[in-house]
Length: 127
Image 1 (tube, rainbow, N blue to C red):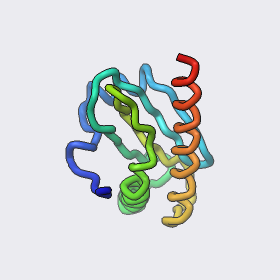
Image 2 (tube, rainbow, N blue to C red):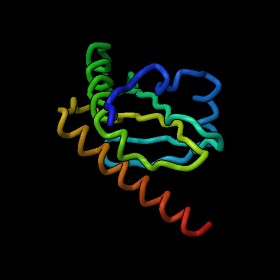
Image 3 (tube, one colour):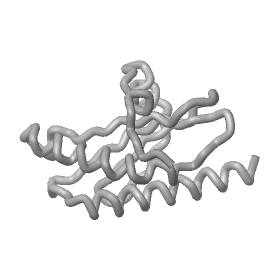
Image 4 (cartoon, one colour):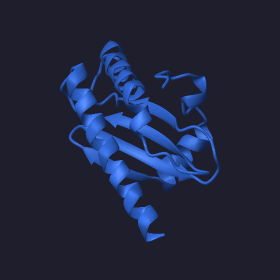
C-alpha cells in the first residue's frame, strides 16, 4: 500500500471545483467540512484542501493548516470507499480560528471518512 499524494490525486481543475461546489454533497465534523461528489467514470480520487482567509489572516498559518490536512489525508486515503467504475472529487475545508495540531486534524479526518463510508454502504445496499 502506497501512501503518496501525487499530482494525479490533486483536484486542480477550476471547472471540476466549481461543479463540486454547485452540485456536491457535504459532511461536517467539528471544524472540518468535506464537500464531495461522486464521478461516474473510473479513476483516482482527487482532493483539494482549503483554509479560508477569514479564519487565518496570515498566509503562513493557512499554509500550515493545509500541510496538516494534506499529511493526514495522505496517511488515511486508503480508508476511503472504493467504488467500482466511480471515483470521488473532494474538497477538505478547515473552518476554525484555532490553529490545530496533527492529532486533532487526523481525528477529524477519520470521523469524516467513517461517515462517508457509512453513507456509501447505505447507498449501495439500497441500489
